[in-house]
Length: 337
Ligand code: PEP
Ligand code: MN
Image (cartoon, rainbow, N blue to C red; front, side, top):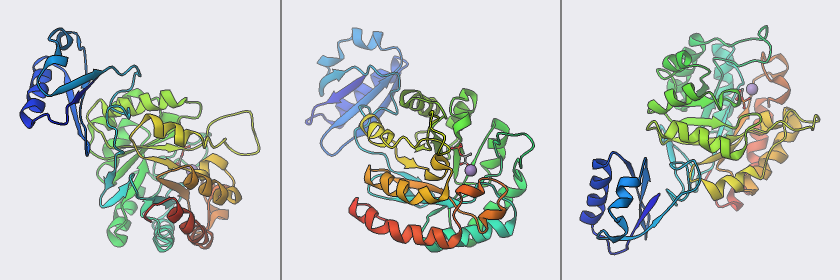
């Protein structure tokens, strides 16, 4: 439920509602917009409603929220959320590109990727240290050794870094090295992991599950937010369909649909969506056109030798050309890059 305050409501009016909610054991989430102040209420509201809150000073009206996700809901927070990842902003009028290899393979490989990413204009470096591979015999990642390379390269390049955490144990290690945690498609409904990252204060990039509906995805975000961590970024990375000509099917309509339902930033990952290098440019342009807040793209110094996801990885030269090509589209979309 949302308590919509009158434009004339005083600070005392707002604070006394919040105090009342806390006294009744409810969570109150204050959202101040340019012209409207809202208090989102989470918990069992029966006692609060019994006190006729619509008559309390400064209250304009009460709005019920029928969706099961509340904190992620745009009704709770009508202004778009902008998330600060160690100085790099995601959301609002910013356009953010996260780039780097699927898996961290060596210091030199990650450093070359970082230099390529930075030179092309990407603001955040990605690299997998714990790899959720389809086959247990495929390369599983360098784990903490890879994270050490990430932290060293972060220091040398100044780029914030992101890695996927595949378990609570991986998360405990990763928080010491990275600026942003990724929850991969395969773990989007790993509720224990979601709750654990929700207790952390590092921002979280939550990828869409392979077969997840938008509603399930927003509820996964809610799991994180309900534990206290409000810094969630959504990333559409393609869904499973009957189509086999691409690795997944990019659900481009997810971007405007999400925009109408949530205030959280929305990125698109054309690399995992297509699985094929040559489709990354057109899908990136489509993502910009439908209003994505940024992209996550796999870049490898030598894709032919990549230990993971080589066919969808761009080499430094192609990534630079892609970013150059995207600039006018980003500008046309009214974004800063
Ligand atoms: C990845 O980003 O490397 C990855 C495994 O992505 P997803 O979880 O979307 O498959
Ligand atoms: Mn990958």
